[in-house]
Amino acid sequence: MSSDTVVIIPTYNEAHNVQRLIDTVMNLQPHVDVLFIDDGSPDGTADLIKEKMTVFHNRIFLIEREGKLGLGTAYVRGFEYALKNGYTYICEMDADFSHDPNDLPRLVESVKSGEADLAIGSRYIKGISIVNWPLRRLILSYCANLYARIITGIPVMDTTAGFKCIHRNVLDTIDLKKIRSNGYAFQIEIHFRAWKAGFNLKEVSIIFKEREEGVSKMSKSIVREAIWRVWSLKFRSLIGKL
Image (cartoon, rainbow, N blue to C red; front, top):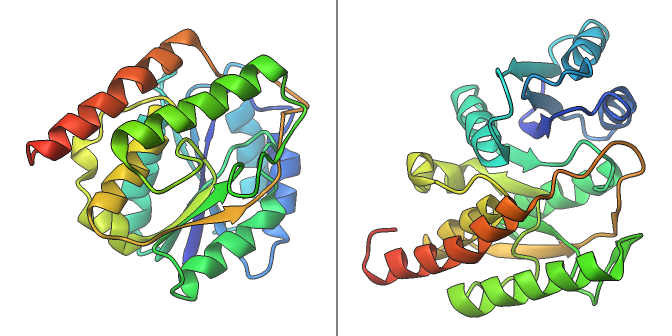
């Protein structure tokens, strides 16, 4: 541990992006550590991370899992690691450069300054800030966020955002073992639980760019999970069993 901040990055077949991403993140100021959670990438992603670990000693960490176990479980595993190892500021970011690593300091500063307990890199807080998405996917994402916001009542425009900084107090308070979402619904659930626990959520405008290398992990099962999960969260909240 060389910093009070760690960035958790789940990976699956990100060989085209991961070493360039590491070089970019390692040059950020102030310094952050990075924890990769790799789900047995057959393209050698983990081996490329290990190469960089020999260059950036004690700043890059890797947890290897057998098989594709999902986004939600990857982040929960990363949260547990971060809490155990004493990090105060815990970030989420994708590995494909759809999230600009240069936006990380702004998210971290929003939490460090006390403006927020959870700072969300938002694609929708200032209109629509998405580049190179087909219209169909853009409409699907926007409507999904509207749907989640209406049902849950969350005061967040980008409920499915996967780029954020979280103060450890949030993760210490919400029960990670109760989290069941494993796709993009995971992001809705984290925001909902943090909000219901009384923490301050703040959206920080970012520009989201469609990946240039690799393949999107979006699937119909991920969409279906998000549709029913928001109702489950709302109902459990109403009966006091969140």
